[in-house]
Image 1 (tube, rainbow, N blue to C red):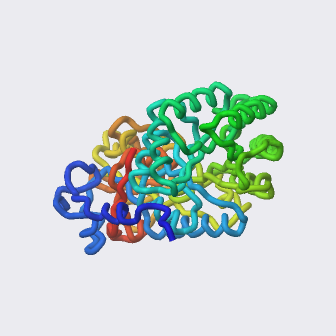
Image 2 (cartoon, rainbow, N blue to C red):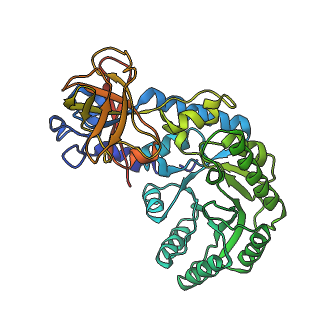
Image 3 (cartoon, rainbow, N blue to C red):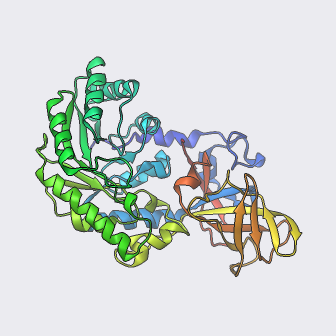
Length: 418
């Protein structure tokens, strides 16, 4: 059986030496390796603040829950790797049954190929000549490498064909016609034009028409009836297009599915001929904010509930006013684009929640914590919203055995590349 990712390359991450290059690492761990920490876990108290941690049990639960759900639904999963940019987590997703890994741009593709990922979806359009030459070389030198990307205009087709011809690429690049909609993101707006683009692909010898793609999350941002109806209407357009295109493969792909409406994607696209591929990525980490409220699992429409696998930790460094505390985590440490960090508890002072407390603002290196019963020196655990903009701030992330324990231990470290 051919590995879906280079296991030896992922295993070699255990040799990484810990030092000042990684802001999560305390000086007391300098010189140790990741493998040393796995063999002899460190107390979380040994790590300074600010800090982002992952919860081992929640990771296990989320990966298994989504793998089971997609298997039962009869669809494939190519999780969006941009969420974590962590090959060690990609391997766990692939080992659990994921069909491939989705990425968003050329630098991310290069990370994935450095770790030998065998099947990749680029949920984007690649028209950069140098990038296409690199991609062509990857395809030509590795017969086992499978790749799929988007086109949404005849001009895109022309540019890709021109660059691939110039690079003398011999294997055709598989592409999906991407369908968009008014006020959405990328994707051709007009259904008739989508068919014209498909015809252009079929005439380009360097490309192969392999499917239909889209992204329903561009048309809604909450779980209201109106938003779900907009998603449903868009997905039905994708389904209609998929049915009429003349593909150049026996098993065309139809792909959509962020982490908010994948239940609707399966309902509408699942019965279509070919292979239905979800690209949900945030599920592996989930959160205590946006996805907690909008995930189909959270809404009770599909499957078991997911658990947030990430937490922020910050120390109170100032109490300049009776109702205001400043903590040492800010925009460079924790996500804030989909909601402020949520104060949960004070480490070492039991599991009693910080009722009524809130973070009202973040600066580069400080968070404004209000109405919290805390003292200077206290370490506060925060629930976070949006894993994509949490991970990109950390290159090495400690994994704890149990974030709810009185004395969590760091049992692993996850390397990221952003």
